[in-house]
Amino acid sequence: MTIRMEERAKALAARGIDIISLVGGEPDFDTPEAVKDAAVRALREGFTKYTSSAGIPELREAIEAKLRAQGLDYSSDEIVVTNGAKQALFNAIAAVCEPGDEIIIPSPCWVSFTEQIKLAGGTPMLVPVSEATQFAPDPERVVAAVTPRTRAIVLNSPNNPTGAVYPRDVLSAIADVALRHNLYLIVDEVYEALTYDGTAHLSVPLVRPDVRPLTLLANSMSKTFAMTGWRVGSLAGPRDVIEGIDRLQGHVTGNVNSIAQRAALCALREHVDYSAMLREYDARRRYMVAALNRISGVTCPMPQGAFYAFPDVTALLADKSQRGGVRDSMALAEHWLNTAHVAVVPGDAFFGPGHIRFSYAASMAKIEEGIARIKQVTEQPR
Ligand SMILES: Cc1ncc(COP(=O)(O)O)c(C=O)c1O
Image (tube, rainbow, N blue to C red; front, side, top):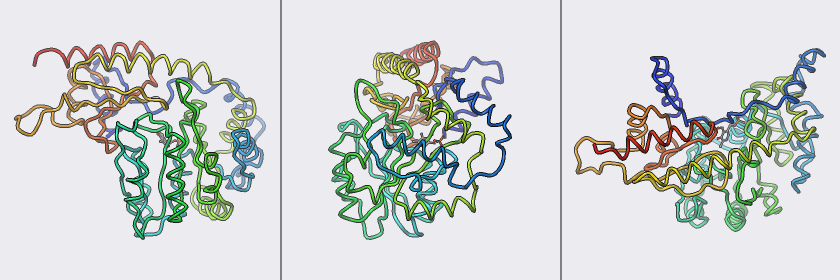
């Protein structure tokens, strides 16, 4: 649905219509210059050959050092460099999921989780989260979803699309579930650097070192360093699983682009400063949430992480007794695209009906104009 909205928006823009897109799932900032320079240097030096499929040793060591600085103890042979977190997650799921297995995902959730599980022959088991718990999963509902076929639980904090950052007690309770039922925890930390209001991102094996043997940590350069197109991510986990994943990746894609690996190495080694980017996201977040809450029929909690707001729009949807009208979030997103010329992603795309995902990975000027337009078309008498 995200791609469909983007394509619709592009088609309208191609007809000369001034479209504002608040769809983006990637930073609107450029990759830092030092990182680009490192890539140019690698290219000029002829660093253009195969590397080991798990990644160049220096990069694995730099990831090891980064994890160690966060209090996480992984040696470089427990780390594999992947084509973005997407491949890290796919590898993790392919490694642990047998056909017929079930994998629990708190939802709303990022769409690739469900599709990757299906590709591995498994069944995604969605466990809805509630706004009452700031979109953090309820461990009791998670445990209620465990069956003899359950193999793993996927966690994504900070979360796409809700912006939730899971608190310590929730992570600890889910670690208990994993240990009790011998389930892997497949943990997506791509938004780890993007938290606000002093909320800290907590990594599960830091909160509960005893669950480390069951934890697979997926991460990426994409969001933290504005490097989505470079395709560099990583997976850290127990040595036996990582060895299997290295073999899998060796046959599927081989190594990540050698030049991109050197660029990633620079971003990690030189401690590229992303605090200015973070401050800008924070200002946009505050503005966006306040402006959304000023639209009648829209209620938006303050997200603590990532770069998405996820307001409730059920008050704007027509109920079954009404004829015509906007019935669901997909129809509302289309309505806003056609009338306000603003593109957003319907919550239905993330199994989050009655919600819309607004991205603030867009300039303040676009956010101001986009929300003003939506307010105008939403509040004008129909
Ligand atoms: C939750 C989540 N995980 C993973 C990814 C993919 O990241 P990467 O670019 O590292 O593959 C995204 C991208 O939007 C995401 O939102």
